[in-house]
Length: 213
Image (cartoon, rainbow, N blue to C red; front, side, top):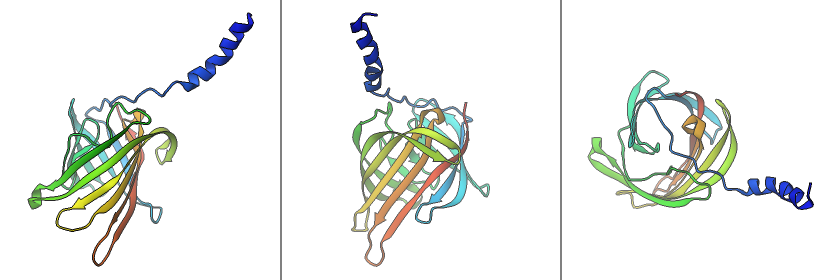
């Protein structure tokens, strides 16, 4: 073999390793897809209860799901086609065009999102949110459903509850797995100052099992 050819061949693995990760496309969610999560109290490192997300409708711009609690209670939830919550199971409406997950997801991408939170049942706007989002990179994560290679997406910022006179801080981290079509782990940290008492939350959810098409 010519010496120059040998040098080129030796350099190929390094060149391939230097190539950027391919962007992650938006999931093709289908009616019938299901995921079961356990809610976590990370302050006590304790599992609390479980719930299931069952997709009943999925289109180009929206996903509808039924949330079934461990005791059998059901509620509806609506998401964008990128899995950003629009209407929560409690009926809260997130008024926004974009959320934490903006596909295709690219490692190193950063963006700013803002939205208001409305509660139609109480006929009120309950707050405003602003977050700085960063697609951190790939990590291995272990949850009850198994070990996965996940893309870590981190969201940090503030929220302003209307009428409260204070500003809270919040941080959400998602570990998204393309093969699962959803995140396998989500950690939520928030701090809400108050006149008499401040509230700190360190919670989240972990995937227990899933059935997708």
